Image (cartoon, rainbow, N blue to C red):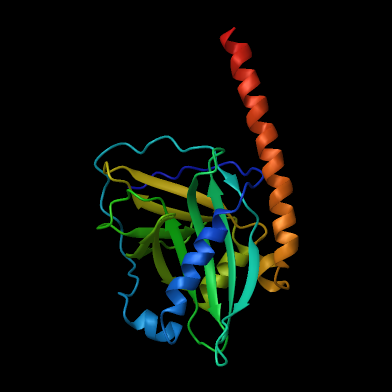
Length: 231
């Protein structure tokens, strides 16, 4: 059984969501439509994951970005606009650990929730997502990039509404040692981002720069505190 590890929210660093977003664009852009892409993938199933072989590792303290919405359009004349609403969590060193992005191509009936876990996960068991205490959904990994391996879930109207009302999006998987990991992305600001206008890229870049400076100050304070404890 997966053991949920609740991660305390913190201020965001440089956004891992940007990496997940780039990967999402690459995958979506390689298909004529999201519907065609989805047909080629196994459907999610409502069944439990296998029991982990070892006790779950202690959860790291993650730094979360806010839920952020972008809408982009390809350079081709007939290219459709695609909107992405995503959030990431990473450790203070900047290493991405978990991300989720809702992908919505304009005019397509099918929407995708794409979740990302780190490289080194056991691919065979796949992933599982849960909103609060709701019904778990399972999905296989579909592709891996340098920033992690991704799994897709059909984002139904019900799922999106549950995310709007929910407190946490739980993303679970099995690592290479057979241990279950369970990471929680807070949903408190999802509805505002999803229903609101897209974020201006320049404004987002400015916010990330300020937050990165804050993170560097936090790291420096932690270093000084550790040195003082050692003395």
